[in-house]
Structures are given as C-alpha cells and as structure tokens.
Image (cartoon, rainbow, N blue to C red; front, side):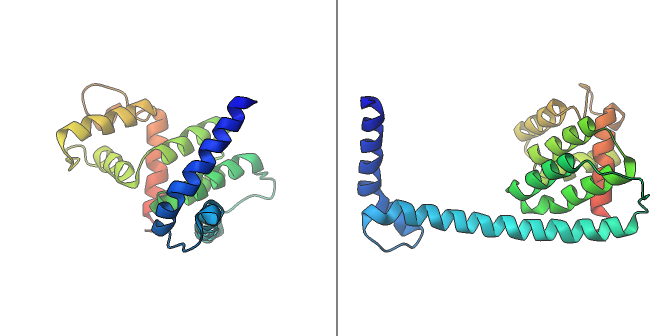
Length: 195
C-alpha cells in the first residue's frame, strides 16, 4: 500500500513540476494542477477525431468496392473478423493504408478466404509501412527493381517481410514469395486499382 502511495505522490510531483512545460507543447495555458486532465482530454479528443475520420474513409472505400462485387444472398460475413480489420484500420497511425485495409475487406468478401489467412494478411498490413508495402510489391512485380533505401535498411526490410511470412529465401527472387505473400500482393494490387 505504501508503494502505491509513493507512486501516486511521485506522479503528482511530476505533473505539478513538469506539467506546465508539457502543457505549453499543447498550447494549454492553465495552472499546473489542472494540466494533466486538460492534456489527456485534448489527446483523447484529437485521437477520437482521427479515428472517426479514418472510419469514415474506410466505409466510403469499402462501400465503393462492395458495390462492384456480386455477393450471393447466402453469403454470411464473419462479423468478428471484419471488426478486427476495422479496428486495425482505424488505429493504424499510417493513414495511407486505409485503401489497403479496404482492399483486404474486398478480398475477404470476394475470395471467401479462411479467417486465419485474413488475420495473417491484416497483421502484415498493420506491421509494414506504406513504403515497405509498395517496395515489396514493386520487387515482386519487377524483380530487378531497387529498393531505393540505404543498404543497412534494406536488410531490415527483408527481415520484416520474411518475418511476416510473405517471403522466404536467401536469394532475392520474386518466385520466393510465399503463398500468403502472393495473396498479400493480390490485396496490394486491388488497393492500387483505386489509387
């Protein structure tokens, strides 16, 4: 109990002594004791607005994609799976990936793929940056393309792509793209059709 009190006291000291400095970063002008609440509210409001904007963009993109598909009346979507994809899409800090997530949903509906594979694909989308996604796609489509990044970062990119199971092999040939990697590339191609 005494340990919890010490942590609380330390947090209060930090807020009172350093809170005013942090508050200036957020443009907050108020007494130090109220700074933490104002900062937390400001961040929550900003994050909520970003999440709402991303959700709106995702819904608009998915709506356009679903209109093009012919979905049979017997099709029953996996609501939990779609919920996971939407949660990843709106929480992803890289706003440029909304089209990729929308393409993943289109792929999921049109291919009726196993939920486990969809989860692997959505994890790959979440883990890679837009630059890495495009670099991997360019390599797989045009085998001789250069990554355009310093050599030491190229190795990191390959490790990330291999770690996600999209690629396997020490020699860099597009034919070493795994089965899940080929499905990932189909999703990227779907996303690129609307960009």
